[in-house]
Image 1 (cartoon, protein in one colour):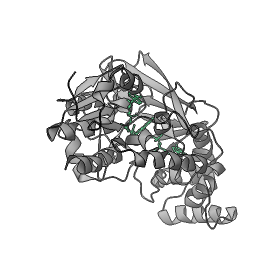
Image 2 (image 1 turned 45 degrees about the vertical axis):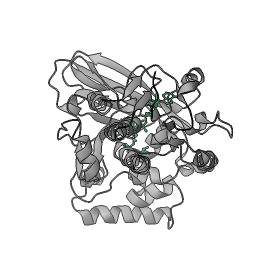
Image 3 (image 1 turned 90 degrees about the vertical axis):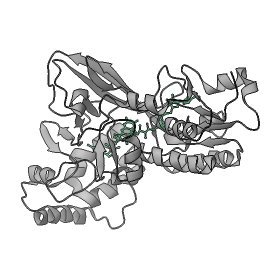
Image 4 (image 1 turned 135 degrees about the vertical axis):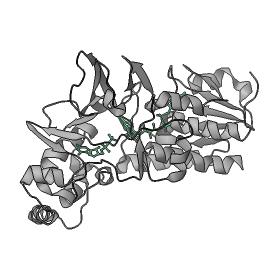
Length: 370
Ligand code: FAD
Ligand code: UDP
């Protein structure tokens, strides 16, 4: 093996974006990936001719034109618009919270009626300055929606009471007083036709990629590759990098249960959320609908959230006070590193969407490739 300018840990979106920009700038990149495939959590796999999102539904959405133009150089995006529905016992509602939701719930017809209803419930709850997710949710949408569509779903997803969760988690969801079921407010949205894996494959062209390779083991056995000129871009969990010295950051993990069904349309929508405690899963994904599939069969996946333990895939950082304080300690160490840069959802312990991850990789490339 010859020397590399960059050793990139993780073939997910952050690693692939950085590798792509670095190779374009004439740098030699080695990408190490411990999983048996590229693309990290946006990996898609062909099952029965359907691109299955193996690590959960991924909808690309952004208002950043530079990021949108960039991803479009690697894939054609379709015009999929995410419009999940939520099932609570035997009731079904449109998401995100909009006039369709309010109308079904309260029988209201106008935005003024819906606003009055929310205001009345907010007043009854007596919340002036929301201090946690529960108070934030009630002051945004009132107690009915909180109880039916937020409370139990959020507690399943995060494994903690809503009173102990930060309100930013819920601020991601749009609240609209129009009859518009688009889950996102972003200017651009879609799914790469043919799947995300193909897109990432193109991004990694020109880089050397080693799959089934854990960085820490590799570093022990390939010391000669690492000298003072080798720059490491690390996109794994930051606490793992430091051997959990200060303690473990908390993550939520997911178990995905998939099945192939002998019918062409199981639920009529790509994403159906189950917002009550009755079901242990949070949502059912029917993958074919992301690409308007017409296959005879269908593939569905149920998502079961649980607390992360070593050996599980860490999917969601739990950004509460305890973890943010702990992360700050790791960050202090990370900032002192001379040749190691941390990026991506796990490297900086942030709840980043794909477009933010790409924008962060752009920023790092700007710093390091000039
Ligand atoms: P990852 O994809 O996690 O890549 C990191 C890679 O590093 C992994 O492949 C891992 O195996 C590898 N790695 C870690 N440690 C080591 C090691 N020691 N040695 C070698 N390799 C290592 N974003 C959206 O914009 N829209 C969505 O709809 C959306 N839905 C989501 C749904 C779910 C269930 C989840 C969990 C996330 C979702 N996201 C969504 C966020 C999106 O997945 C992330 O923004 C993106 O995948 C992050 O890319 P990354 O490169 O930072 O991390
Ligand atoms: N959420 C909810 N009810 C829903 C969907 C989402 O209460 O039907 C809350 C929940 O707390 C979740 C957050 O909104 O963690 C963000 O939801 P999103 O669908 O954006 O999360 P992700 O796709 O990242 O899991």
